[in-house]
Image (cartoon, rainbow, N blue to C red; front, top):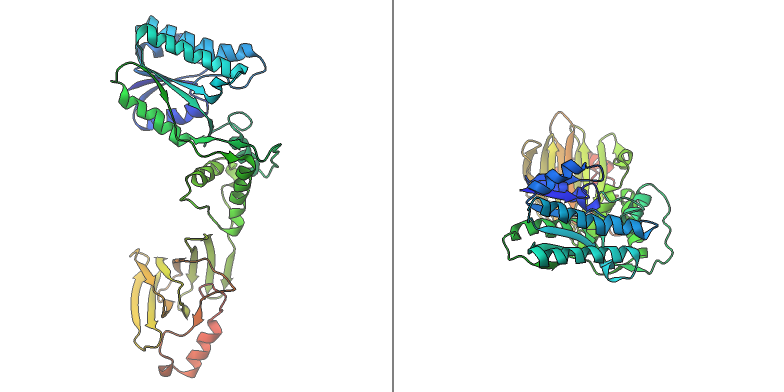
Amino acid sequence: MKILVTGATGFIGKNLVAELTARGHEVFSSTRDTSEAELQRFCQHAEFVYHLAGVNRSETETDFVEGNTKSTERLIASLNAHENDAPIMFASSIQAVQDNPYGRSKLAAENVLRHEHETTGRTVHLFRFPNLFGKWGRPNYNSVVATFCDRVARDLPIEIHDPARTLQLAYIDDVLEALVGLLDARGQTPAVYEEDVTVHPPIALGRIADLLQTFKESRQNLTVPKLDDAFMKQLYSTYLSYLPVDRFAYDLNVNEDARGSFTEFIRTPDRGQVSINVAKPGITKGNHWHHTKNEKFLVVSGEALIRFRKVGESEVHTYHVTGEMMRVLDIPTGYTHNIENVGTTDLVTVMWVNEAYDPNDPDTYFMEVHDETTQSDDHRRDASRNHTPVGRYS
């Protein structure tokens, strides 16, 4: 479709243009720099109009009237001049019911569109948006979330006059879903539709600030938020989008010795821990078992033998894996196990365990995989000396 988006470089507009373009539509992007001739061409050919342009911050009521009400009148006049009856979606605000300059200008624009429908039958979709958040918002302009994210990401303090004050927020992707969905309703009987978007329960400003601080600290404690909570997931994604480009990377603590290294990557309170284990050629790591803790091993580079022996039994079970296989091995409870680098290069293994390591409750017990009755005293001493019971895969 040929789609006109006014306010195309604003918060909603930038996200919507990107989405529509990705879906293959031809987008006419209108901004303050668009010439009158170009705008007329857009109004002549557009099959759907998203009217997002507006003024939401100004010192004078005149600016609100000009940017919100008068601009809507001019857009409709241009469409009618070209006999274009394309549906119009209008970005209004929940403040349209409030008696302030911004709210009055938005309500007046709504009434202009209602009159247009009554006069011509044009389909109109009215959205009264709450506070929005997501990527590409302008700090100190679009939303308090954008401002908070930007300041936390840059190690700047947040000023909150009333931490208990609550906001009702909608996420930009939920807004996009509602807006793009309008394209499927073009054949409906002309009407004025008062549309809704998915909103989250009210949340305190102080709570938002606290969550953002935990996201910042996650690089040190390796945690990730509970992503089954929709708001937490969306806020975390939003926060990351405000990181300065020179702060995308961060270093992990590498526990290294002559045998290789062990590096914790991610820790979660309920979904376990992911680590990267490197073993030099000829090195065997492990030789321990767990009551409840279970693991998954994925060799991504090198060649390994992974051995298991059920506690109390003598039979040893061996798996041969290489980085080319991309084969995951479950490490069941009650089996002592180890992993040996039998290749000529470093062995790199991604290890997941179902619970983050707790030094006060490691649930890790040293026991060699090979039946000790068949091993030499020297072999047992070497294995014991190479074992460091600190919860890392040693």
